[in-house]
Image (tube, rainbow, N blue to C red; front, side):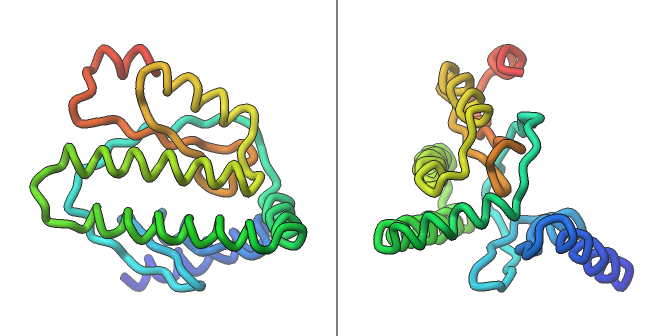
Length: 178
């Protein structure tokens, strides 16, 4: 426990050097595992009652997190009302997702469908913020051919894409996508 706390603190310092003002999510998840909810600078561990399988695709496109954050801030300054609405919608999606994955409901297929829809909405909002990228959009188009839902993760602008692998997805389809 003490070693993890120290590792997490040092990793966070490294994140500050690379990203400027990181959330702390990356280092915390890497150190402790689990799902983390970030709001107003606070990190909260979320206990999931759902098994979610994700494919992570690395676009191999590097990005500058500081520049992406600055771009979102500039867009917010140019369009304060619209961007406030986008941020409010993202917050609503995050809250609903947390509620779904913590729910003790037995209907995982319905829950999975809701997660897919929320991921799709979130990706659209991230695109509205200006943090998507041609490489991300290519992954989205590719996974959509197989009726899979994907969204960027991290700062965007390249980096990685998460694709939800439904519980009923066949191994043959997974092999073909990969």
